[in-house]
Image 1 (cartoon, rainbow, N blue to C red):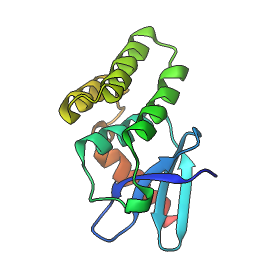
Image 2: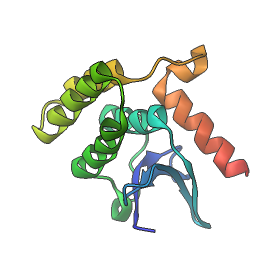
Image 3: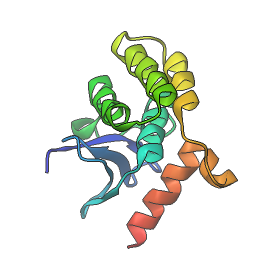
Image 4: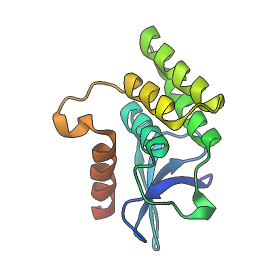
Length: 140
């Protein structure tokens, strides 16, 4: 496995949340005991990018901290597999915003517009979705 990329900590000094850095669609949660992985669908990968740019979590471990390039590559994987031209265009605009170094709020707005519609209200919030997935992964 290529090194994981952390976008933040779930709580101060606690487990971190992030993704695999090798292009495999996987959510990663790390503790002092190691890294746990689970497959990440498009909504999860976009939620990770939103949380990264929204700075929704506490600072990640510096040696694992994701970069803009890491997040851009994560989103390119979503964009490349998107069959709907309208959503692919929205994702392309978000990736361009990241690559162009646009402001975090601009990137976040573009990512939110590309987020798949959630079947329930709890999953509608990207950060809530990530916290729920991470806590479930930590219980397993």
